[in-house]
Length: 418
Image (tube, rainbow, N blue to C red):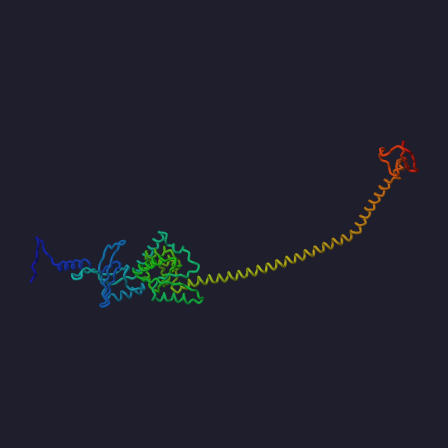
């Protein structure tokens, strides 16, 4: 029996199933084939019991959601899609990635509108990751942050190390074993700050741990971020702008070792140092100590050699001084001997000259004395008047009656004073 049509205020009333059936017909009529659709998976919604997956897809414009739709991947399609996606990207389907899917648009009155995904192109996801990476790099360079961490001064001997990793990971184990069991006996202080290391949640937890380290930055010389191996999709969080910016502007040098050999991530680019594996990060620190140790030994050897050379030079200088002193003494002795010999040769001559001069002087004195003798004076017509045998020099010395004797050159004359 056909159901009677219902009206209200002269308008027909439709049931929900009738509207759904109409929409199903319209969509089936207008969307007959499969379409390539680009979207981001914000939730995967995988149900292991039946093997089906119900991803929630969005299109974002900045931080806001522009469109949102439910999708379906039946178990018969999910397994081959996942295998191909993993083979090309190195990771299975996951949340937080942009995909290009081939899907039909279907409407069910019971389940609503949904995209029934037939296939997903993994190379497109890699391309989107590469595009996001370039955008992150350009933004950091424009902000002047790209080389900020590289410009920090790594301590000469970095031994207090903050580690961002997972304690149960092989990468962390390799790092600690290599560092603590180094053959040279160098000692390091390690503090682990546990964090997720891949996926969107990894960005948040790593940033939080960097914040914790910065609060106590005076306790550390540097930071390392280490993990085991992984495909490019698993590393997409390391191309995230927020995480890369935090690493670039961090006040301590950061060394990264996130376990892969190709497609260097932005976090690695902006780190102070980057190594392929956690083990190589450990070797980096050991080598810094080893280089200093070798330089110290070279300095010790150079100092010892300098001391030996200095001592040798001083000995040579002393020998040269002693040799010059002996030569000088010998020269002085020879000169003195020569002077003595010269004096010995000159002494007779000088003695004769001195004796002759003295003889001449005596002769002159004898002549002078002879000339001054009273006899010679008397010869020249002078006379000497004597009173009582003494020469008279003053007339006042005489008195009347004194008998005087005047002595001439030849003879004498007597007289009396009146």
